[in-house]
Image 1 (spheres, rainbow, N blue to C red):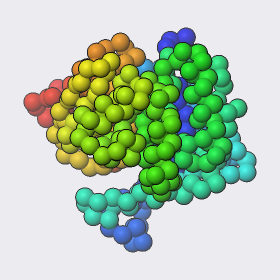
Image 2 (image 1 turned 180 degrees about the vertical axis):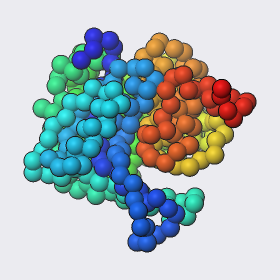
Image 3 (image 1 turned 135 degrees about the vertical axis):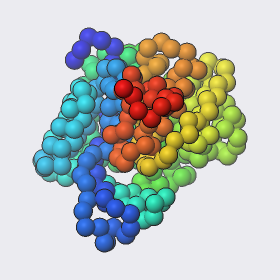
Image 4 (image 1 turned 45 degrees about the vertical axis):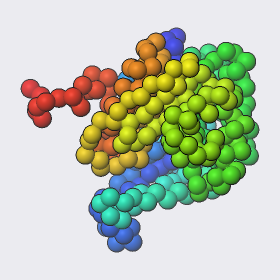
Length: 316
């Protein structure tokens, strides 16, 4: 591992198949194969912005697991992977039923990723990190994944490592009530919390975005960030409120935009930049993710961030 400061993250990354054309999946003649997972997406986004990142995960002893490892490693992420010989790599499938409506189906019950264990994440990696980033998907996968999640957070807390938490609610994994109970238990353990408006409401009750951020911050985190999609984002950081407008783009695929946003925010945090700049970069990276199909393929490199401000369509 590089001696440079790094962000550590862990979770399930799956193989991803998506139809190459709009319409019912039953009539799709061709599909593209890739990978996707919230935590590895964040790690890739961080690396593209110049921040060292480590991702830990578990995959099956199959070709899809090899694909997951190869793709993440190719992006410059330090990959620490466990291979499970008795469980398959998870799979998700994207179906674009209309040009504007997309459905994502998951095949992850009993997957290798859902069996991630504390021993899959070296405690020394956790205690040596500048920041640990976790997602609310992991504790919803299984009791063992939830145990691993809490173990890693405990190691980080004991070592004085910052912890960031993206609520990342998945309705096919648990109920809103069940998720809300866990969120309220976990949020006081976090330094930074990211949530969409609806996700925040699951945790702290319905309200205006500013009120949602305040309620989350009241539970303990020094930073509460609310992702507002086309309305941009807002954050409370050390008691101050900040807002950043969205960047208008021609949306192709919004899956992964939230992960890109998180990567942008955390990259600037790692660079010691102010909350205003963290939000500006986060909104820009989220916008980039919407420009191409796929979970992470459209994430920008740092020198590309200015492209959304370009007046001319061709750079020479």
